[in-house]
Amino acid sequence: MWGAIEHLGRDERTRGYLRDAWSPADLELRRWFGQEAARRGLDLREDRNGNLWAWWGDPSARPGVVTGSHLDSVRQGGAFDGPLGVVSAFAALDLLRARDFRPGRPLGIACFTDEEGARFGVPCVGSRLLTGILDPDRARALKDDEGDSLAEVLRGAGRDPGGLGRDEETLRHIGVFVELHVEQGQDLVHRDAQVGVASAIWPHGRWRFDFHGQANHAGTTRLADRDDPMLPFARTVLHARQAAERNGVLATFGKARVSPNNANAVPGLVTAWLDARGGDEVAVRELVEELSDFSGAEVTVESWTPVVDFDAVLRERVAAAAGGAVAAGKAAGNVAGNVAAAGSAPVLPTGAGHDAGILASAGVPSAMVFVRNPTGISHSPEEHADRADCHAGVTALAAVVEDLCGN
Ligand SMILES: [Zn+2]
Image (cartoon, rainbow, N blue to C red):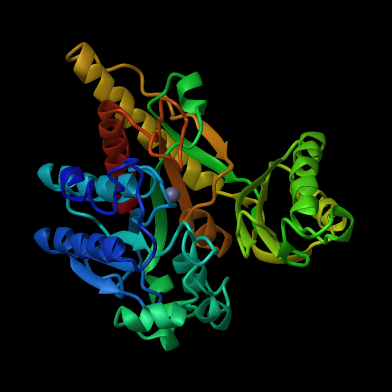
């Protein structure tokens, strides 16, 4: 499966991925998802918001156990963020079928649309629309860098943007959701564990800062006569770093747009995006407030997700099943016939947002399984997970699904 998709949307110069939602690469990945579902005799459905569901069993009869992730990427992203969860879901199903497992309830594999928000600026669009957290009118009006709205892009892809919005029928099908994901940090390296389970997702958000000025000639406009928005922007970036250190949170200006963007012109407008997150919600909010006041810019909230604590009972159950499966796998590989005592997988918080977090915040019992990332690097072509750890992830996910499908 990995070999079938690893070239899709890859920039061969940088080896980074360009898998914007609804781009040709994304459409090909969606087709691939449909083929993998068909190969296994699963029932493929696309909901009104563009999320894909491949079902083994009929979820309208009884809510199912769903696993999966997303296939889109950040720009110049890595291969694992998203696709590892989808590929592992299919692989876990294969593993269970090879053991003659018959699920006691429907089993679904999900691919959420536009998780990264690379194109339209809002992350987790598919799951936010599904749960009603994102207003469909606002979603339809979102624009990409070309000025095309999401509504236009959806129509271009043969979809009906009028159908966007909270989808009760699809939500009723999800009894529980488990997302496997490459770790975006090095906690598991430090704990010497292949697989872990999420405790919580930090509160996080994105804010757009518009610094207004007056575009003018770089050679003929005296310094004293300039209204240069690059200066308050630069001051704000430096201030963000200090304020983040003081508040014990993270603040990043990772994207900026300069208009008119000429080397020989004083800019007339600088638009920059602040990403802020941290363990303490109040500290994150205070940082954004402080920066808004300090910057003098026009500030717009593009997204905000409060802290998400994953269901504690489900988390313990997932940690036990995942940890047991990985320990048994290791023992079988090392000392045949002498299975080590099965400990629970470690439980860790994450600063990254995920569709599982959106579903959890909307009341859907959800959990996450993380696979070790040796460098911790993510959202970069260097993102990686060793093959053995990916296999441990599949083993763990299969055990979790088996346990959850049992009743
Ligand atoms: Zn992801």
